[in-house]
Every structure is written in structure tokens, then in C-alpha cells.
Image (tube, rainbow, N blue to C red):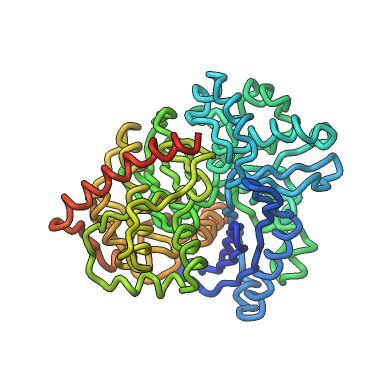
Length: 484
């Protein structure tokens, strides 16, 4: 058996697979996000440990014998979070999360230093780790002076699990401190934020052993002590391992809290001006590109809260047949946007509202707005040298067939739906645990699931969607001018 642990924003998932990669069982522990000020987003790392304990306790209660047979553990986690420890491994402050935008001034200052884009292949986004440390230095200097180690969220769990300060390439690529082409920390970029390599974890590939399970936890859970904990991956790279998106030209669209258009690459293809993320993949000598939308299903969940109707009820009101855009447009920038705008200040909007704009019309506009945001990411990937011929859909929002039809038509690409199964980040993490424990071929292990169905673009609505996308594109500069 092999265990995958995925530390998300809303919870920790523990997933158990056997040697044939069949899913045996899972457990879950819940998490909340603290937002003490507008634009802030934080979590207490102690809550991650508690949620992980809850998830494994649930798994142990339902599958004690199988849990006892675990021979390898893989980790996945939300990226970019700044977890700051002192010399005694005490947490100095709540972790500043990936969707926190307080460090936009510091991010702009670092991005103005040409070394960052040259070495990392990316814009320095406010959500990345380096500008958060610059913010802490500027605003909490006493705490900054005590920083002995900076860990990403999943690597804080690794410290708890294995007692090691280790990270891996895919997650570390999102810090703005990694030389992404060379797959190593950059002393120059660390020095630019008054840090050095001693304050960073060591680096391994995601498929490599990165510590062994501590005896105390092994005894508590009934697992053998010292079993390998794999390097693991950032959440999107782990999902790619779960989906088999590891070869050049393979891609997925993820409809989660945030939205991701993810493409695997066999070589390093940076184009930071496009606001595409170019990161190391979890497998050795591979990279990937991502367009990132900060509010995907979050946009529909926001409308759900406003209307008092569940997300499922809202989408069911639209029926099964894709409809032509109504003229009502939605910009899904509820907490700013990454690709292609790199704009932490922009906010969402409805335009074109009229007396006849019903709840269903608003829902349709939200789904289309997110679909057009994915189209923006597709265009950005093209400018970065990546051409896609199809994508696979994952994430909670992919349960809406209407939404997938809108995305296929907006992207002008077929969207594959995988056969029933759990192919997300926890599954990818478990696969990495299997590879680290057995030495199996990563490409053989990280195979793609069977395709259950394919959603084709609606040719009859292609022109209507193209017109609506052009309206959508024109709205960003107009709204930005008002906000500025």
C-alpha cells in the first residue's frame, strides 16, 4: 500500500492505493482560512498537522490492515505559502497563503530586478513566496530577524512526518528563489530578499526519497517506521502525476477553487511576459507551464452565497444544452488575477445587466467568464510556445457538463472526461510515494486514465462565443481604468 497526503486550502486528504494503483480508501481533515485584513489569507500550520491527523485517523478507522501495509508516502500541497520557523522549529507567524496579495508592492520591486525573470522564468507574483518574505522584513522586522527556515506548506508536514528540511523542484519553482532551468536555489535571488541557502530546505526530485517516517508517528498509526517519504509535488504538478500529464503536449484544465490550464513540457520554455507560470515538474528533467485563474469554482460559489442556491442547483437551471451568450458578461477577478494580467488590484464585475437578467442569466455569465479566463490562459500558453490539441478536465467544477461544453467551445478544443476515479493531487502524491519506495519507472507509473467521454466544441455557437470573448477581452482595460 502507498499513502498520498494532499494539503489543500480547505482540507487535508489522505488517499490509500495498492501496488496496482487501485484506490483503497481515503480520509479527510478540514481547514479554515483566516482573512484578518482585505487581501490577506493565512492559516496556522498547527491546523495542517491536526487536519492530517484527522484524515489518517479516518483512514485507519476504515482500513486499519491496509494502512498498516503502507510502504511509501507521497506529499502534495498548496503552493507558495510562507511558513517561517525559528531556530527551535517554532512557527513565527501564521503562514501567508498562495492567494494573499498583501505583498504586491514588494513583488513589483523584485520583479523590476531583471535577475528574477531571467533565472526563474516567471513574473514575481504577489502570491509567490519571496515577496512575502520581503513584506515580513518590511512590516515585521523582529519576526524576520528570527527566521531560521522557510518551508512551503507540504514541507512543513514533511518536517512533522520525517524530521527533515527538504523540498522538491515543482513546489520550490513557485518561490521566486529557484533557478528553474538549472533546478537549484539561486544565491543571488535569495540575497535580494536578505536570505541565504542555509534558511532553505535541501532539494530533491519529486520521485526521490526525502526522509523516512518518524517512529513516534509510525507507532501511532500502525505503520512501519522509516518508510520513505517522497519528495512529492506542488498541488498542480501532483495532479498532473495523477492524471498522467507528464509528456510533452499533454494538458489538463482544472476547475477547482482556482483554475489551472496545465501543459507538460519536455524542456524549459519560459516566457514570463505572458504571465504563464513556467515551473519544474515533479519528474526529473521535465517542466510544465500553467495559466492560473484565481477564482474558478470560487466564482460560482460566490454567486451561490449571494443567491442562496447551491452551485449544483444554479447550474441545473441552465439545462443540458449550451446556450448562446446573452450579452451579460462576468469578469471572475474576485481576488485579482494572475494569467494574463498579473493584477492583484483588479476586481470582478457583471456588465450588460438588464431587467430581464435572471438568476440563470447570471449563472451562465459566471460559467462563461471562467471559460473565457481559460481562453486567456490558452492564448498565453501559445505565446510561450505551447500548442494544445485537447485537454482533460479535472476538479469539482468538471461535474457540470454545461460548464465543460462552455469551456470546450471557448477554447475551441475537445475536453476529455476521465473514467470515474480519483486522479487528483492525493492520487499523484501516492504515485510519487510508490516510485520513491520501489524505484519504479515514473513514466510507467504516471499513466493517463481511460477517457470516459469527450465534450466537443459546439460548432454552431463558435461565432457567438468568439464575439462574447472579444467583449470579455475589452472589459479588463475598461474596468481597470475605473479601479485605477
